[in-house]
Image 1 (tube, rainbow, N blue to C red):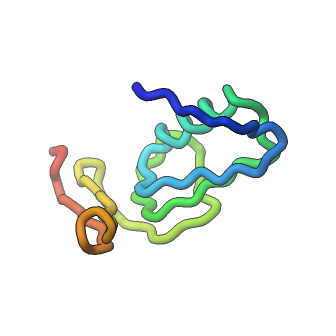
Image 2: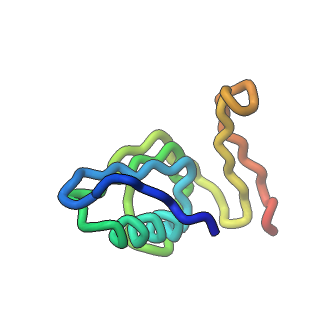
Image 3: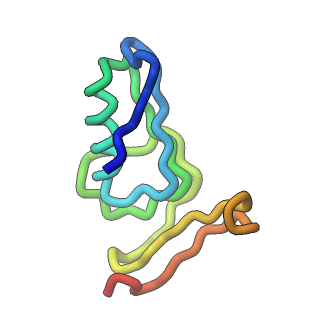
Length: 97
């Protein structure tokens, strides 16, 4: 696992965590845990492009692009124009069945 290198203090700062696809909440929980290892921010907010539900932890987005109804077996990917030539959300139904 790659360790994040942050060369500034988060102590007493407002921090915005951004995620592309919000699913169980575990990734956000890990990000918050890592952030707290660096200090105590004044406030932590979450911005999410796609919320696909199926939360396992009581975490919610403060800023949200879209909500999609999916099953746990579906795969949701955000693709960006800069990387693949088009901005789009791709849903693969039943990928993890």
